[in-house]
Length: 145
Image (tube, rainbow, N blue to C red; front, side, top):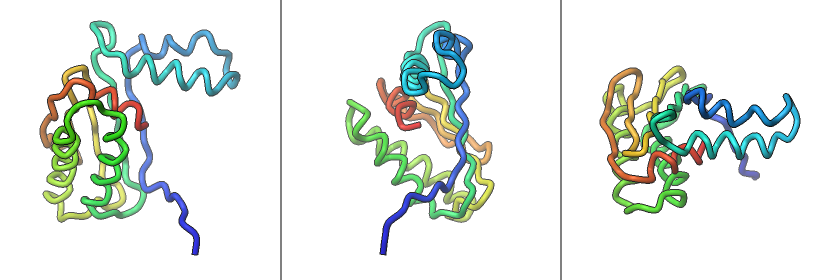
């Protein structure tokens, strides 16, 4: 029996024009690794011209709320320098959002994460769940995707 990674969601990143400008030195289709690093660094650096980077995840398969929340939290934890309780708060917001719709993140469920210098706001299917206020957790979530 082999383990395999199965993509259970599609993800889109929304950021400022400043972040997109980080890609201008790279010709289309060339230097992909360098372009990815430049875009990630620009998207995770928050400031007046680039205050927010948002991620929208749409479930393509059904998954338990605790499973998806745990997977995201597990990915954020090593990238975040703050307390582990901040990551646990993020996980709890995701679980609460999925619990409000029956405990299952069914196909088509939409998660939105608004990452800022101050923290991460979470919504599930358009319903705001709350914000984890912690320096560094916004950048850590950007690094996950």
